[in-house]
Amino acid sequence: MSLFVSKAIERGARGRVEVSPRGVRAGFRRSRHRSFVAGTQVELRAVPRRRSSFAGWSGGVTAAESPTVVTMDDVKLITARFVKVR
Image: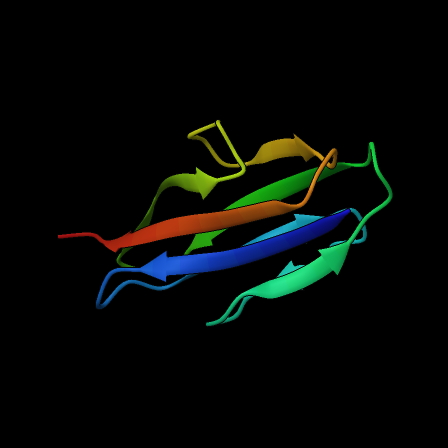
C-alpha cells in the first residue's frame, strides 16, 4: 500500500509531518511517498513551527487531530494543513 503525504501551507506558516513506524520523517514541500504492507497502522503527527498552527487533515484521513493513526488498506493521499497564527 502506498502513502502519499503533502502539506498545504498558508503564506507565513511552517510545519512538518512525521510518519511512523520507524520515525520516517516527511518534512518537505512536495508530496512524499512511502510503501507499507496492507494492514499496517501508521501514525501521522503534524508538527507546526513557531507562529504556525496545525489546521487539520484532508484526503485519506477522517480525524481532525494530531497525531492520528491510519490503517493502510488502500492507497492514501493525505494533506496536512498549516496556518499562520495571527
